[in-house]
Image 1 (cartoon, rainbow, N blue to C red):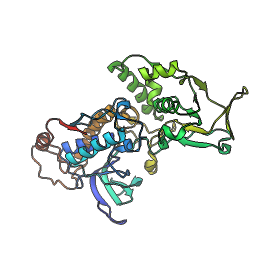
Image 2 (image 1 turned 90 degrees about the vertical axis):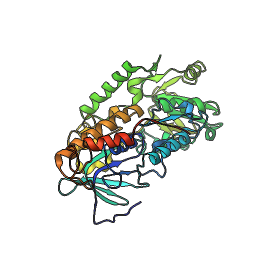
Image 3 (image 1 turned 120 degrees about the horizontal axis):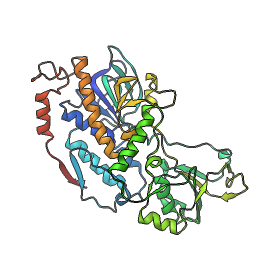
Image 4 (image 1 turned 180 degrees about the vertical axis):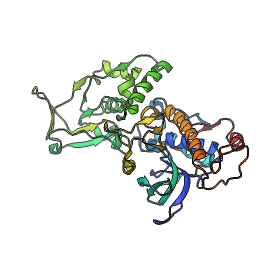
Amino acid sequence: MNNFGVVAAHTVDVVVIGAGQAGLSCAYHLRRAGLEPDRDFVVLDHAPLPGGAWQFRWPSLTYDKVHGMHALPGMELTGADDSRPSSEVIGAYFDTYERTFDLRVHRPVEVNAVREGDGGRLLVETSEGRYATRALINATGTWDRPFWPRYPGQESFRGRQLHTANYPGPAEFAGQRVVVVGGGASGTQHLMEIAEVAAETYWVTRRPPVFREGPFDADRGRAAVAMVEERVRRGLPPQSVVSVTGLPLTDTVRHAREEGVLDRLPMFERITPTGVAWDDGRTVEADVILWATGFRAAIDHLAPLKLREPGGGIRVDGTRAVRDGRIHLVGYGPSASTIGANRAGRAAVRAITRLLHRTGTGTGTGTGTENGAEAGTGTGAGAETKADEAFGGVTRIRV
């Protein structure tokens, strides 16, 4: 890992922040467009190992419980042991992917801020130095920003409070009384496995859960994406996936409903030293409150650029930030899914190569490109043909 100091900024054409599904998809398409890692672009990841947010998932989330993990572009994941933790399966897959396509991810690197630089470049300030870039892909996801709601009396609770981001698996809750807050997929997964070992469980949500019958087909997918797109187009924070898709009604979920595990209570009004309480006089005694209340987009490092709209979100057109066309957000809003991130990564790179062509010479590929390739990007017809040869076909790996 290079250390460029705190004074001179290393110049590149593109900085990719994040090496989860979205970031790796973008890096793949940058390579395919002819850009060279560590010369024309760099991928920065704060996590210690490959695997994106998957490496932090709880051990009981085995691969067979993962809903809709879509393969990265150019490499299928086959033959995975369904009984292995998803953190291990997907971590190994991402590791192999990075090495196969020589993406040269820098880690662990903290990105502290992105601000306006000189000469029309963005200045990316990181724990390994500064980068001056012509374009930026933000693929930081949400895992680093768990959302903790605030309720009266929260500080007085004498038990344990934790979030999905710190969930250790069900064993630690054996014999305890557990309140699970949140109506998403993580909340139901936590609840169903904790109920097998806990003394008592209670499920509390703001809205009645909506269970989805049947497959999540293309029409449903398009409808869900359209709803999320509409919000981010208006500059509002993205909605959670479950809020637009509903909870899949699997055999396991059906059984849990029949057993009363998924009997839902409305949201409590306050927290007491020994549990939670409602205004109608109902109370529940609890040893643990588990907040399965989701995450927010990890975009605080972009604050100096003032991209947020009055509604609180960043307005995007496709992946492009409307307030600054040099910036693309992948894995944000409608692309916040594994298949969405793949498609958005390709679209973002196409837009960025056009931007690099319009703005002139790049950092490392020179000006003598063939077939009218734009100076400094390596994305002309000759470069694209070579990239297609280098990245031809689909690799299949077993993990």
